[in-house]
Amino acid sequence: MVQRAAIYCRVSTDDQSCERQERDLLEFANRAGYETVGVWKETASGAKDNRPERKKILALAQARKIDAVLVTELSRWGRSLTDLIGTVELLQSRNVSLVAQTGLTFDLTTAQGRLIASIFGAIAEFEAALTRERIKSGLAAARARGKKLGRQPGLTPKIQKLTPKVLRLVENRCSYRQIARDLRISKTTVSEIVKRHKLSQNVRS
Image (cartoon, rainbow, N blue to C red; front, side, top):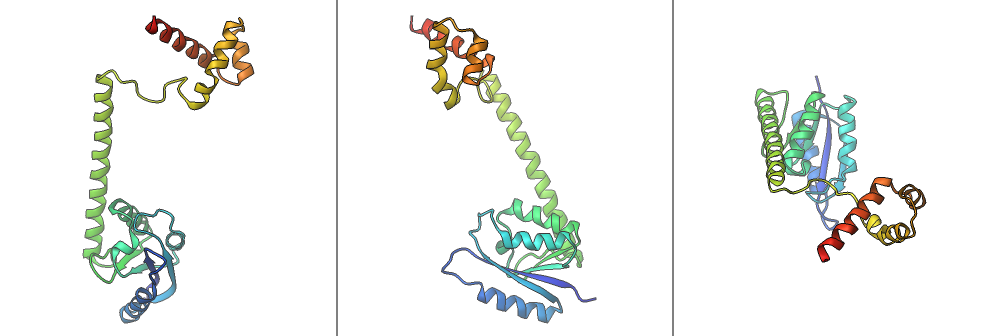
């Protein structure tokens, strides 16, 4: 059965051309017996996330309209190892192979390709676990040092700007509820502003 393939070409800058990649991949597809359904080309740096042409190919894969994606090398497709693994897993879930002319190939029709895909999936899971562990460890260490985590109330630029008005209204004996309603902030925020102001006054004295 002839496999349907999408060809993906990418260059990093506008002064480069996808012409050589397209020519090589069309020849490769012909030699390997693929039915080329189209060629998708775009200009994007290796780290750039916005790749509309690649997204079109992923959509074709999800719709099961292709059996393989052909690239000259895996670095043309993946932005990073994590991105490569994530997109390979997506393609694999639709039984679509990622085939490179050079280097590693995730050809799911071969035992080697399936093995490589499995190994990379395990690496991705391991890296995710390490990341979660580092985050938990960092948060625990910060709490142990007495550091308050998360955004502290009353510290946003908007609240800082409103602080003088709040204090002035408090001096004019306006209720916290009225101040909150007039300035469109919560009563808790009004209370926090006043509390911080009193605390700063005590420190100065």
